[in-house]
Length: 328
Image (cartoon, rainbow, N blue to C red; front, side, top):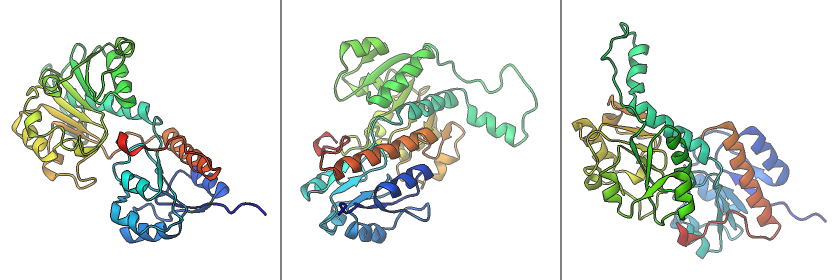
């Protein structure tokens, strides 16, 4: 008699090819509407699923995990970040958590570089002028932005995403500086042409552009708080393609409005889709709807990693992308 197939619940719509393959491999329940599950729906799914496939929009906390059914043994997250999952509690209850690292670093770095250029060259303002029909022709002093070649880029978090940003920025002639929990090996620093700063305060005070590439953890929440933002040059810009919670968004908005920071490029926000209207109204910001990893290729590769993690688990082995709580 063939072994019983794992019951898998997917919380959001995924690319059609990924959904089709999940249905082939497992007893899969797909999401009909492309909307986040309610807390009640998540709780119900956790009562009967062997494997839950959530995304960043699904908050899975200790209280939810406490009521999960005994059969739930794997949370195969569709995405690299797992700050929306209480990983430590999950492991305490015998539930493994996997993720999809290393898939969209290049895609996210493309967006970070685009935001750097967009803010420094005032692209959002130019787009608005053209779309509103306000352009009256070229003049020598109109829409003057800044040159990025020769400017200092500070990278906060030099993991795969940060390194991908560094390679792109170096090709544009920027000087690469970084702050990281651990210093890179000398050969990696040499390859990237990167200078390490042990002190984040000292680095942010000296760079012209700051790129946020670290994950959201308890230790990085509001890492860029009001005090640290005030250390930045008034001519500097800040770009965030990581997690919105790393920046104190209210403090950033106040400083942008006051001209204490020249501009910001944001793909992520502290309160998800609830963006501060004062921030949206500013001319010196470029805002994107969390599209850092939004490529067809990346989304399919993420799905493939999810399936590999589940299949490996089903075969009685450790998922290759197992998340270890003390790392996060």
